[in-house]
Image (cartoon, rainbow, N blue to C red; front, side):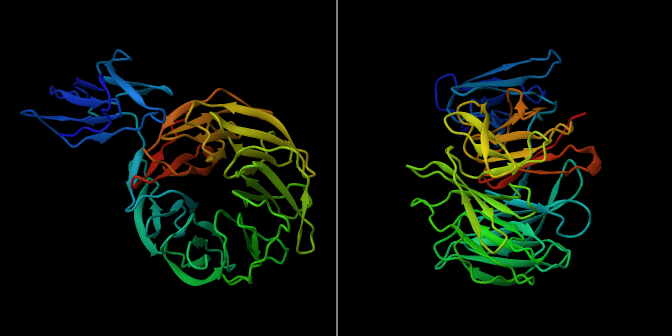
Length: 432
């Protein structure tokens, strides 16, 4: 048997993990092959650990003195602990298989049953996962939309019928955004496509011209006005002097509190590494606000971190930081508030902001190589040192949804991480 994760001397341990009296094999990469007798073992089961900087040791111990064997792995970035829940079940996320893997997604109630569903992109298109409301099996497979080169889906009511629709980019010649109108039962109908030449990247939806219809803007510096039926007018550039290396990310929100949606764009290309703020001029265009700050970032997030009614900015960290926080002044300006410390392997530009512990204060989630770093908010845009949660081996994004039957008023969202290894990993919120 070839047990993954064994790449160095001392990278393998033998012990009875599931309490059946038979020795099991454990690798420093977080894989367990359970003994079945006669010198044979089950297929290895993977449990996420922090391994971005490499791992080289594994130890087995009953850490809580309750008669169960736990697993500890050591590596360059961190020590990972897998607590044994009994009968061979270790603390881990719930995997929902997705053929072709998944890198990002969007959440909505696509079939109108009151339970949040999920749309994720795969190697062949978009897969719809329908929420069950059950903790053990949070999703069941729904319909599949075939679309070569599908990008991250975006959800919005594009035709005004109250049913969530999908807008999905696809790389082709030329690039295009495809509109899929929701039928209300978890299935979708292709409405049409909008050519986005030489574009791609991230997409946001908002009513930029206040006509009651959703429009889209892309990090490829294109904006298209919606017709209200799922189709769009020809897109036009909205920044007249973009950086030569283009934009890497985009976020939408009312930055100056005038009731009109504005945009923040990031540029992760040398020599710029800057943030660009463009305010809606209420006449069909945008005015760029001079900025003097910059940070290497992929996708920005606009959110009110300190509860003052002004949108703040969260950028993906670099060089081992989990995230960089800037406070907004309500007029288009931002001031550095904090750089959240992170372990090496965090700070890949994929972040999420949500109140995961139900205290009414937004928390920051930063995705590492195979680990999620959680920074709990203390209020006033200050944060505790992070703790980490293992995800799948190749997570591509972070979402939050209420998946296991809690009342929405509980305010304790679960965490969903689409994973390129062929699954969506759900981390159930057990906060009491």
